[in-house]
Amino acid sequence: MAFTVATGLPLTLVPALVAADGAERRGAFCIDGCMGPRSGKPCLVKLKQAEQSANDGAEPVQFLCPAGLFKILVPVIIGGKHVGNLVTGPFSLDQLDSSRLERIAEHLKEFELENETAGLRKSWQHSPVITREKVDAVLTLVTMFAEHLAQAASHLISTTASAQPTLMEKVEAYLKEVENEEISLNEVARRVSVSPCHFCKLFKKQTGLTFSEYRVQRKIEKAKHLLLDPGARISEAAFQAGFESLPYFNRAFRRYVRCSPSEYRARNGLRKPGQ
Image (spheres, rainbow, N blue to C red):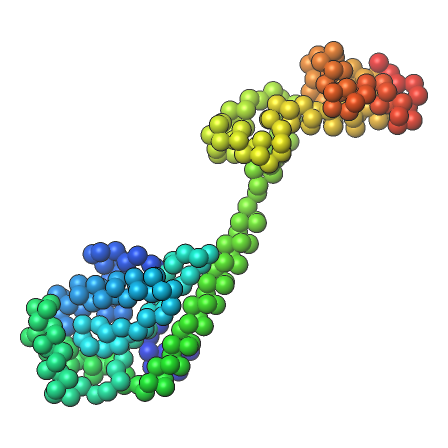
């Protein structure tokens, strides 16, 4: 990638909350252990500590790995939540001399790795030495990448969410499929993948109606359209709209339209409505 070519450093995107055993992170930024098989665990501990600091402060963290090399961890924050990290390194600011090697080896006693100097030297040999000015530039670049990644992810989440059909769109699509069939609330809830109780709450919140009231209104709207056909009888319009009882249709029509079917036809210029 361009970042590695420009800086000489690898850049890795790591999910937040690194597992304690690190099994799913094998091979990522040295945590297999650059100083032997037992050095992976302390490296992972350092990484988790850096991640916690980044999470607490919501800002980049520069830290030392057990080998005495620097790494930079920049948190990726999406919607106020720390979801991952961009990690770059390792690198050093100076060459590994005998005094520094001695100090690091002393520190490694904490992890019982003081005898792993061959691996330690090899890690330093393959890690670039960079200036403090370059460290600042690297930190700026990785921070910009993290912000861009967060913005892109937020946009993707927003786009994906808006592309998903809403509850009402799912209900409308299903009712169009079954048309005038009598279906229960439980059947509709199952079709849109929610519990009947939750469906009722969501439906009432979104429409202000119960599901039964909504179905009646849909039938009334269809009946209103059918009644505008001068050749259709009122009873035909009622039955085609899904009403099984003409008296019930008349009562429901008056309740929702505030007039009778005959009056509705007259208002729309149909002076001789059929019955």
